[in-house]
Length: 211
Image (cartoon, rainbow, N blue to C red):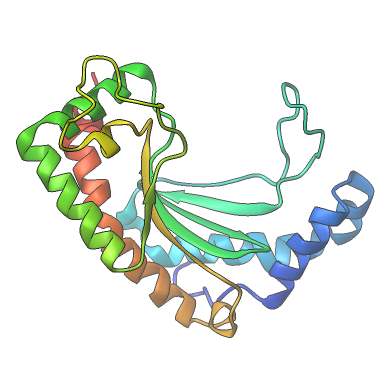
């Protein structure tokens, strides 16, 4: 039900700090009620309060898929929710809110680069990136090519953007007292409003072109 989010209690941050030190089944089972009460239930309330108009949502499970990973830790040390292209994550480091595109398939990456290359859409993205960075948002990529991507000149006006293999914008808030109050909802909504231009640009020029 909407109207229930009152912030993430301090126990949530403490839980993830301890989980990082004791990432095993025995410890987690003893403290599972803390996770449900202080982490998962508040995240569910937050998602509900963000409103049904934001579209489908997904909250991460605490269990990691370790079948193909060298890291055998069974549990994630964070909880996150995806809300119509936005990403909200809580961990021992605090709260992160962002949007963007994460490691797209080759065809989608080609569309992203074509949109960056285009004079009209590329300049629009430049303005969005400058505006977000002026407001204190991190705008970056999870990976980039060492030089110009194939088919693009190294002296392209937007070479820094073209080198990105994906793009995101967001802000991290270190643990602070307001995180455990209803004010957290207002902060999250404000971030989502301010980063919306990047999400809109991606939907218009990249994702909307998918077949």
